[in-house]
Length: 313
Length: 302
Image (cartoon, rainbow over all chains, first blue to last red; front, side, top):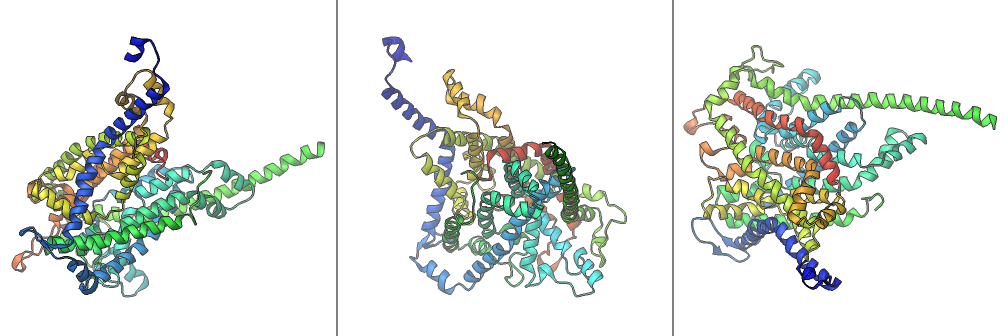
C-alpha cells in the first residue's frame, strides 16, 4: 500500500507473491500456535520424558536410576501379567468394536428412515452416553447383580435356569463390561457421526434402486454400506484406539477382577504407577503398548484400500 | 401413439401402489426396531430413577421391585446433606466455565490456521496432530502427572483445563478445520479485499457461519468435562475440590478399616447420578438440531 502511494507503481507480482507467502507463514503459525505450544509442552515433552523414564527405576521419592533395558526385558520375559493383560485387552476390543460400530450404524439407519418421532428416539439413544461412568458402574452392578438384579430375576423366572454371575464370575465379567460399554456408547456421538454420513448419501440412488424394485435390505447392502464405508472406517479406527485404551469402566466397575478377568493393560500400567509407584516400569509398559497401537492403526490404514469406497472421489 | 398413452399411466399407478405398500411395511419395521432398541436403552435409565426412589432395604430384596412401594423423594435431599454434592456440581460447572471458552477460541484459531493458510509445514503439522490421537493416554498420563506435580498444580484446576486453552485436542481442531474447509473460500477473500485482516475475517465472516460446528464442539467439550472421571480422580485430592463425577464415588458402600461397614448409600448414588444427568440431557435436547448439523457439515464422516 505505502509502496503504491509513494511511487505510484504497483508492486510487481514477484514481490507481492513473496509478501503473501511470508504472511501466510506468519499467520499460519500464529493461528496454530496454541496447539503447537500444547503439542510441545503436553505431548512431545511428556512422551520423551516417559521414554527416558522407561529405562529407569523411579518412584518419585528418589531420583531416577538408570537401568538400561532391564524394564523391557522384565516386561517381555518375566512379567506374568503383561501378555495376559494385552491379550485380554485385544479380546475386549474384538468383542466391543464390531458390536459397537454395527450397533451405532444400525441405530443411525433406523433414525434415518424419516418416520415420525425421530427426535424422541434420537434423544433416548443418546442419553446413556451422558450417564457418568461411576453411576453406570453401580447401575450395571445392580442390573446384573447375581442375586438381587432384575436381569437375573427375569432369567430365573422365564427360563428356570441358573443365572450367570456376571461381574462376579470370571467367565462373564469381561462380556458384562462389554455390555455396559455398548449401552453407554452405541447411541452416542458415533451414532451421530453415522447419521451425518447417511445424510450425505444422495437420495436419488435410493429412488433409482426403489424404481428398479430393490428391497430395503438390497439398498442397504449395495448402496448404504459401500457409500458409508469411509464413515465405518473412521469409526473402526477410533473405536479400536478407544477400546484398546479401556480403563475407566473396568477400574470403577471391577478393578480388574475377579481373578484378573478384566485386568487390561491400562489397569496394569495404572496400578504399577500409582499403587506401586513404579513410575519407570509403568512407562515401559505404556511404551510397549503404544508401539502395538500405532502398528495396528497403520496396518488398518494399509488394508483400508481394499474395502473403503469414496463416492465420486 | 394412443396405446402407449393409455398403458403408461396404469403401469405407473401399479408401481406407485406397490412401492407405497412397501414403504408402509418399511415404516412398520422401522417402528418395531426403534421401539425394541428404545426399550433396551430406556430400561437402565428407568432403573436409575426406580432405584433412586427406593430405600436401601427395598433395593436389596431378592425379587427386585419394578417400582418403589413408597417413592422416597427425600433421597434427593439426602444426596446434598450426606456430601457437599452442590459444591461438587458447582466445581464441575466452574471447570467447564474455565475450559469451554478456551477450547472454542483456541480450537477455532488452530482450525483456521490449518484450513486457510498455506504455510510451510501445514501438512506436516496436521499429520502430526492426527497422529497424536493414536498415542494412548497412559503414555502421557505419568509424565504429565509428574510435570504438574513438580509445578505444584496438583489440587488445582489447571491440569484439568490447560489442554482446553491449548487447542482442545486433535479431535476438536479436526472437526472445526473440516467445517471451515466446507465454507467457500471466496467469502474470506472478499473480506480480505475489503481490507479486513485475518483476525477480523475469522471473527466476523467465518465464526457466524461456524455456529453449528462450534455448538457441536461446545456440547462435546461440556460433556467431556462434566463426566471426566480420571482427570479429577488423579489431580484432585481434596474433598471440597472434587467434581460431581468423582464425588459420586463417595456414595459407594465402603468397607471401613477393621471391617466396620458404613451405612450403605448406593440408592443416594443413583439419585446423585440422576441429578447429574439432567443438565447434560437438557443441553442435548436444546442443542441437538445444531449438533447433528454440525457433525453433518463438518464432514466428520471423512
